[in-house]
Length: 457
Image (cartoon, rainbow, N blue to C red; front, side, top):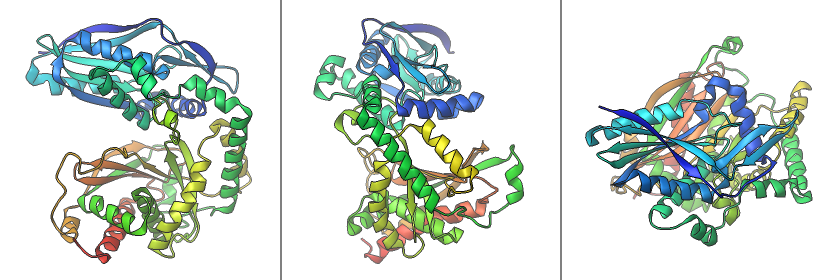
């Protein structure tokens, strides 16, 4: 039997201040506010076992240190005029904590239910801090910790940093000691840099790069969409496919080492080559989500820093290895211009679209993997031959999503125990389910075949 209670985390004497929102905050806030009731799909939920179980007071004390460490966790966002957004860092306040009490055997089920509850509501960024906390308590000890972050307060890489910092605090570190050992860029400081002459020059250069690439790219990637009559139906559902491949986890490492590129370049290059082969357009574009954590202080930040780079690869269908090698160099230029004022960029892109001068930029790539953890960290690396592993690939169709604006295809790369996952959502007006499967299996087969050509191990 689960009983319900509510506590809170009291924050006092934390850093406070007011200033313009960062480019990352503006970008995500603009997206989630337009989504309305659909905004929770951008939330960042996680549910963790507390091992060994600890008293609630200890868990809440650790979370209090976490709030003191990262300003973004006690920040609200307020509209300011027609084109402004302000961040307000509160120096004091309370963060509600939802508590569920149950028998220890019921803790996982209670944690999953609490996670669904906390993650299923949109955040009110004008009044609410971008973090929700839940505890599952059994016989006086916390067995499960439930956290849900707002995407306007943190991106995926920020969530990973938050969890690492929480583990350090649980091991005895404090906000003060962590701040000394690995300084993190706080959002008010980031906004100040972006508003400086250097920041304005970077913004202008990035927007200029985007417009140049869009003007040069193809107006359509798939010239013959699967079901163009569906495009006018706002209620059509976008299928979601998940390819789980043990072979890909092994093969991508081998190909990356041989070609002397990152495994991320191998995957994006393979996706570009496969998209070109299927669409008939040799010139392909992806909006690639970039973590933008190239400096140590940004690496340690728990905030929304990630933005999209415009990756354009001409002649992508010519040769697989060539596409992978050029992906590396093209990515450098694209990633260099992946930080900008998105609201200003959107206005410029809209003018290009109105004049019919913008390339098709409705294809998205998001490599969400944490470089610090791999598919064989928690399971043994398989001893089977790569050819045998290729027969263990699984393809499933987990769900369907409501129609998404300017999305023909969106692919996420994820790490799974002993495998790599490719999760794909597509507009059925452009790609049907058969084409989705063809794309996912094609990416896998390109990389596995190249690895096999190097000699099976």
